[in-house]
Length: 364
Image (tube, helix red, strand yellow):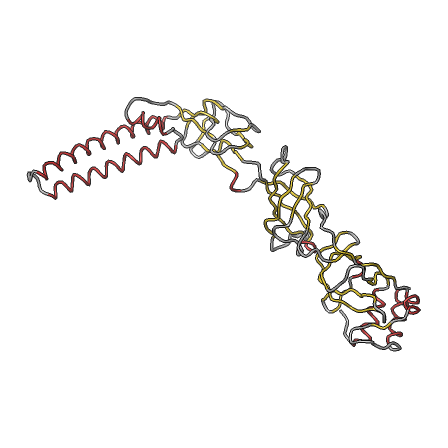
């Protein structure tokens, strides 16, 4: 039947005349003969969009890994997974022979720096009195600068081990010692992972905790490649079943083997209970140039371009459009259309065949 309609349309093409260069002149009787039906164009609503599968992830800048600063023994673990922590809150304590060595090096560096400072003060006075040469005073100053640099280095070594500044100063003065290193939370957030256990022997740089700030979160949304071209950074994203919303950050420039494109969005709001790696459903409200909404069957391809056939007094006028997206049987397009205009939705192939006969254009 479809091929019969097509043949009939081709035959009619030679009997019809064009009212204008692009008009397809067809009478009401001819439309009925070919079974052509139309539907109205409407303004594409700025809705929440269709649901897409998405995966929750933590933004890279909101994740911290707490590792052992040196080899040692885990003496106590003070938090558990899913605990909420504040920046600076203790997470665990480690006993390490390396800490005693670091304290000893600090004290020795402090003593050497103090001695070098005294020598420099003495030689400054002797130089002023003309008793020693400038070369000797310069050598003494160089020794002082070297000793002071070593002291700064030893202080920094202890700070990197997690020793508080106040305790470092007490150790330097010989007024305090510590047998344990306290690991603290670098940021406020939630403890995602704990690998440390009491009594565990660990090497330097062993990862013991993961702490993350969970607001905002990222969504990695899998959008079909045919829809992804219409997604723009800044468009609103919502999570199904939650009072959470955000915006599109980026759209990948490559499609996967399954012909989906990864769209990254940042969301805020009701994020309680969401976990990294969790599968959720997200909607993208595509706001860029809302465009027009037409039945997907109305869109015809010709020489790599998309067209719809708009009903006119003489028959139809082909109008070039750009497809922005498709959801089920509805397409969202951008083009020179008007709200309420009628477009062919049934018998589109027959209208196209007549058009090709009038215009003399080749196939797709």
